[in-house]
Amino acid sequence: MHKIIVIVFLLVHFKSDVYGESHVRDGHNIFEEDEESNTPFIPTKEWQKVKRGQAIPAGIHSRLNLKTGEVEAKLLDEDDGKRTAVTKISEKDSSTFKENPGEKDLNVLTKEHLKNVLSKFSDEIEIEDEDTEVVKQKFRSYEELKKEFDELKMSIKTDSEFTEELLARLKGASDPEEIVAILTDLEYLLHQTDNAVNFAKDGGLSSVVLPAINSSNMQVAIAALRLLGSASQSNPKVQIAALEAGAVEKVLHLLKNPELSSTALFALSCIIRRFPLAQKTFVQHGGLSVLASLFDESYRKGVIVAEDLSVKMRAKVKAVSLLYDLMLEQEQADEEALKQYKLIGLKEQIYSNEWCDLFPSLLTALDDHDAAEKGAEAMLAVWDTCQTQFLNAASVVLEAEKHYLDLSRKETEEDSEEVTDGYFTSLAQLLSKLTTRMKISKDEL
Image (tube, rainbow, N blue to C red; front, side):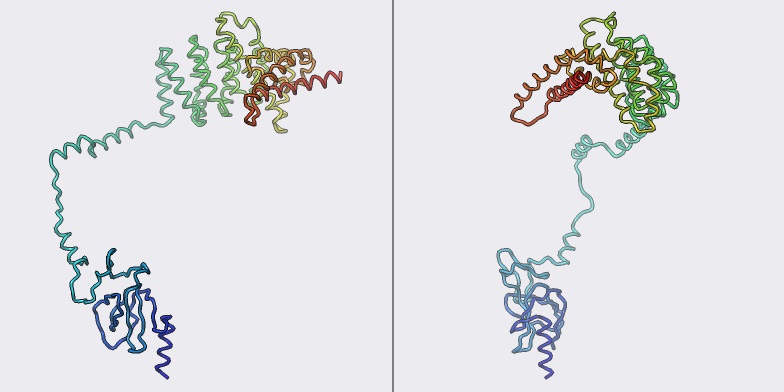
């Protein structure tokens, strides 16, 4: 009865078949036999007896022979594609494993052999002088690199330090080209909000920028206006400082100069956008009247006619674009801000300064598509204020609509293979909105 229990236990533990065959996975000694042996078990293709005390490598077949009562083991079949942890199988032949454990296997690298090979390595590596010179020519020494990095660290400066250095250079500069270069470098630095705020806080607008925009040298004045615009753009703190320094009034005065008008408009728009108090100052100081003067023919005096046409039109488009943006800004304002915008009275000033007659004039420049677009947008924005004047300019609007409908058809034919909403198509639709309003207004009258 006792023998039967032992046999059943072994069969269950090793999940054996009729012969007690199983896979050994962990490599531990799990066999108890009468004989003890400390020599490692060397598996072969044939079943061998496993002596007591021998460790069996992982990944081989083992079984309990029920006839003899001995534990036996062998290598896996070749088609299993597995290898054991303590054996070495040749890719060509598995005969590397010796059936006689006493033979010395020359293919096995022993610990003593490895120690012997490593002991022969020399700590000193001989390098020829020629090789040393080649390396020195190609690469710098550690000392040289360290010195260069130290010099680089010495040259690193903050934006504030750069600004101070530029201002110091500006005080001693007399050459216009040098002054323009310094103002351009300052403009680059003041694009960053914090740098511009610090510059304004230190009085840079009053001491540097405003004197420079009044320079008799046009290039210096243009550079200073760009600097003023870049520092003020979307920067409320600098906008307030510019307003307090009287920049709005000074820039309005420069708008009358054809050579400065375009850049002055840029600076002005950067100061007054999203700033109701500055817009009120702009209106109170006759800003709309000054902008309207850009449409006056006397504006051409003292300027080469060939150049004046493009300069004049560019200034006109910028002026109308600024007024359109200010009107749109008021429409999108929240309830609290709207109270401030109403105090400006922008649309009333537009009507009183004859802008209702000026907006349609941009539609006459049919070769300047940007001008036509800005003019049409502005007319739609102030339709209720200028309805009567716009109806008087109906022929101009209809001619512009016909022109852009023709361009739209050509555009559609050229892009017939692609579904696209072209530029001229959108302009034609914009002008069609104007003509539709005119028809409705005439019917109502």
